[in-house]
Length: 252
Image 1 (cartoon, rainbow, N blue to C red):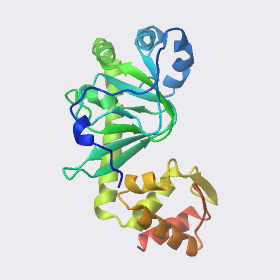
Image 2 (cartoon, one colour):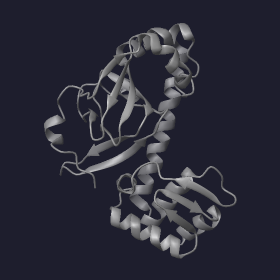
Image 3 (cartoon, one colour):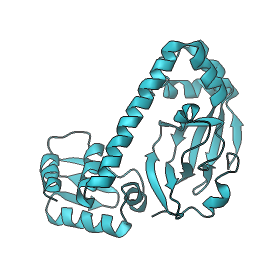
């Protein structure tokens, strides 16, 4: 499992940022097309999204930097431009679990607008990353003035809830083989015929994301490889027959 150093000291501190802050100002045109690709902002008219971009900022994080700590006051949500961000939940014992690995062009932490104003997880940069920090107060104000945008937000939160319920089922009832195979198949661009997928993060991070130890992840990958179902080369995994792989997992 991943441990964040001194997370107890961070949990009630204000939002933490590392790296250089840059006002978006004249760069908003570069962000607009990418934000429009997200389900949340796809229907936002330019005259509504432009003021939001004008008040947003670009943040650069080094590997290991904490963007915000679990329990800290939420003032913003984020769009990942480059790099990777791990969302991590803490147990009372101090152990940490990666609940999601954020990829470029993903929005994250937007749900805090409806969760009482505190971040429910910690966000930590796995590699050098650039994020767009979007102010929550202006975002909520825009939603309250436009019911259509509010419905769009509710639809996104419903999709997120469905995802979390699915993940809870995996972690509570599925074997290590089923968790890993399900994760790999979710990454598949196709379900028929051979295909290759790249793990979105280090194997240790993927293991934590699935509630496994790195050693267990390696053992399961080895078993699947020896069964002739996959080839593994660093983070690239070739799946010879996705349907056969699914049947193999069901037998475990």
